[in-house]
Length: 54
Image (cartoon, rainbow, N blue to C red):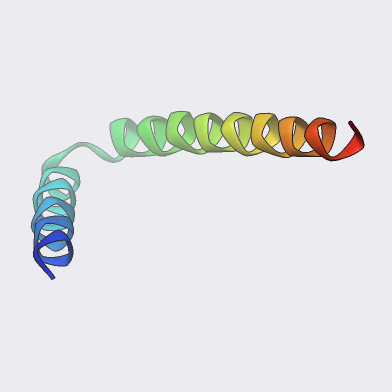
């Protein structure tokens, strides 16, 4: 429960910051985070696939 409260508090802080940031900065940051998550997902998928074949 404490984790959920902390996560919601952090989400509120981040969304509050984004609301005051310029739109171009927000879009660039979202793109960077999206690419980072896509690379992470691809690496995880690749490592799990490789581990299953051995």
